[in-house]
Every structure is written in C-alpha cells, then in structure tokens.
Amino acid sequence: MTSRRISLTLALAAAIGLAVPAVAQQHQRHRHGGEQGKGKMQGMEMMTTPWKELNAFHSIMHGSRHPIMEQGDFGPARGLADELAAMADTLAASPPPTDCQGEGLAEQARKVSDAAHELLALVQKEGADDEVKADVEKVHAAFQPLMRACLPRGGGPSR
Image 1 (cartoon, rainbow, N blue to C red):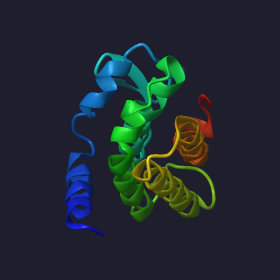
Image 2: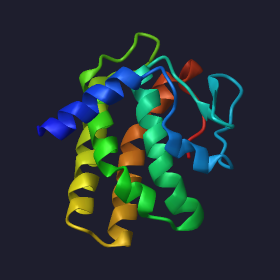
Image 3: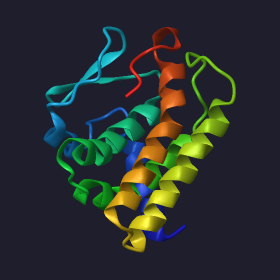
C-alpha cells in the first residue's frame, strides 16, 4: 500500500460519521426511496444504515455512479476511483454491525473491495468509458446485498 493510499484511507476512516464528501452536493436531484433509514445528506436524501463504513462507501459510490447514469459524465467516477477503492478497503476491514441481517456480509464486503480495485486498475490504465461504466456497475452490484442486509428489516430500494 502506498503512503498516499494509507493517508487517504486513514483520512477517510476519520471522516466516517462526519460530513458527507462534497462531491455528493452535485447530485442533489437523486433520491433514494423509503421512509425508514433515511438520512439527509447536503440537500438530498440517502438511505443510511448502522454500518458507518458502508454509509461512507455509499456516499462515494453515489458520487461516482450517478453522474454516469444521469448525465453520461465519467469524470467523477474516474476522479474518485482511488478514494472509492480506499473506502472499500476500510469497509472490508470493518466488522458488520449486528443490526445488519444476513450471512457472509464480511465476504460480500471483500467482493466490494475487489470490484472497486478492478475499477481503479481500469481507470489507471485509462480504460474506455463503456468499460468504466461496466466496472462501476460491478461495484454497485457487489454493494447492493450489503445495503439490503443493513436496512431496516433487510429491505429497501434496489437501484
């Protein structure tokens, strides 16, 4: 692990539970549905869980994925790939809270980290936009089981 990555991971870990990354501001139009588990995040609603590291990862992933889906803008996904991978490592290293329902959550968190590192490698080799979009969707697909397991009653939106 490079010293930059270690510093970034430590900074991200320290920020968990504090302010949401500023990148989320540009995505105020997007709303995650559901009444339980909502948290206000700088002018938008986003589902929150008892797993702080999952929430922090979600905010970075949101800032990476939704510009692609809504405007075809790949800049945030490319620019946040190293932060996403570092936060995925933090997520994978954290124990799932007992409030999260399901088996294999730690293994699923490792899958999120693996997918995030695949995205980072692709971005570092300047992969094509369609490849970046596919890898962002792989990260999102790996993340979804964790989110569902940690929402009240294990339910919630699957977007």
